[in-house]
Image (spheres, rainbow, N blue to C red):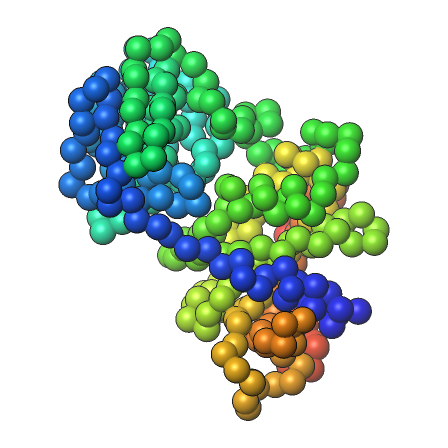
Length: 316
């Protein structure tokens, strides 16, 4: 059964690893005036990210940066935004709103999603090829194409937001949209996902790491302080529960690394042959669960021989 599950996850994982594109030739203008950036905009999964200070000044937005909280507070004509580095939850006039991408730091510069910050202050964004034109004359509105967080925040009470059972694709798309990078207190990890709905209707979310360095760092962090696994997975697990009305979520952290050619000197039990004849190394590092009815969660480490070791558990 476990082998069958790993085969399914391997087939879902193959070819999914994300890439980041540069937008060096992109031109951004506000009310007909070109915006000058010290560092060119970047595109991450079709979301244009720009340095926050130049675009805020061009839009007439007052702002401040809190180094300790890693947080931007911005205001314009009665609209206040709070954005936090690494978090896709922004607050617009106190209402929690999910952005398409989290603010990121690139070479010391903070980048924010262009469409979100523009539309949050009532601007209209028009994209034509590599040209982005912003008209800032509209009245303030809630940003378009953003997903409000149910109840304004993640409560993790397991209450259903939808009477329909969500599909595996719906959960997968949501995770890629909002949680393509997961964080521990000291590190950030770009991840991929494989979501499987089990026979009992519960969902397993497998977090896929595609290289030894990332998996080794996370393993070392988690063995030193197992509660880091709650930091790493807790936000998206609670979010899935609130958004899709889930009572329980199983979480696995797995190294899923495509191999070049025939595998040599690797444990047979960790190898999966795909339909196209290629191979993937699959090693599950940790497994855990979140029970939103009992408000209980736990994580185990996977050991040699299929054994597991309880690392951490707790109620909330």
